[in-house]
Image (cartoon, rainbow, N blue to C red):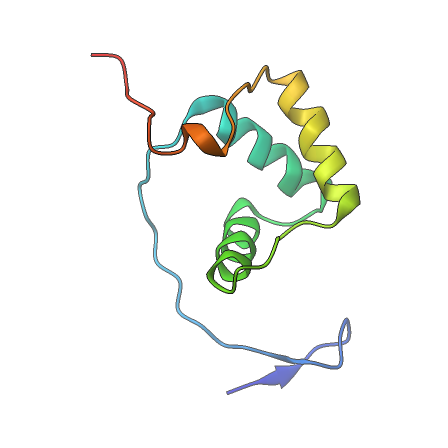
Length: 92
């Protein structure tokens, strides 16, 4: 059942979340955590938003957030881009 909160006129969507144990590249995780902290949201909320936007072919970030991502990538020495997405292999 949807309810309205004080922060928005849109109703809340009641969902069921599950705990998962995913593996992710260390520097990517640092950038994501930094971005979530910047927006004062949880890492899970950030990932859900990214995925939902991506499913619709939309960019999940506005210009300000893209600049924050650029800064965090520099800070955490993340030199990967989209072209690397299916090429990543863990060390043995």
